[in-house]
Image (cartoon, rainbow, N blue to C red):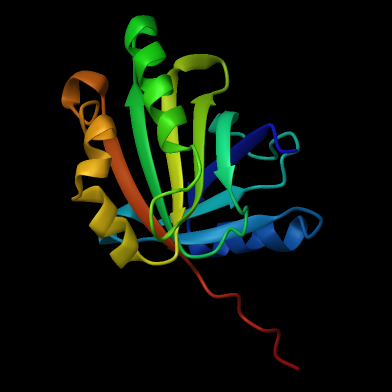
Length: 167
């Protein structure tokens, strides 16, 4: 079972080099849906991070298939302890089967060495399924926390297709 996920940002060349140097790890290269989001490398190996940027997260809850394919939504929150308890309870209810239509995975994570920083990582069959959920009443329990008071930030990504070696 995975206990942590880590991520880093960088240029295509730098992230591709990390992938090539770490073929024993399960690394996903993701491109931001918005042009200013750039590239993200997500390590879903569940082993200690190889990245030096300090973006390692402990898995607090998970529900889903762990297929790691599709559309990725990253929702970041910074919560005080009392707010965090209620937030976690609401996310745990959301994570109860069945997941919302089109969602293949839900991860609730806290930043290593700072458990007030949360990441809600959801993986979807496609961006349309995510958009339908995001604008539905089912998202309301999470939307309450999507405020500047909670340092909320959202970013979405899709997988960069792997290039086949030319021979």
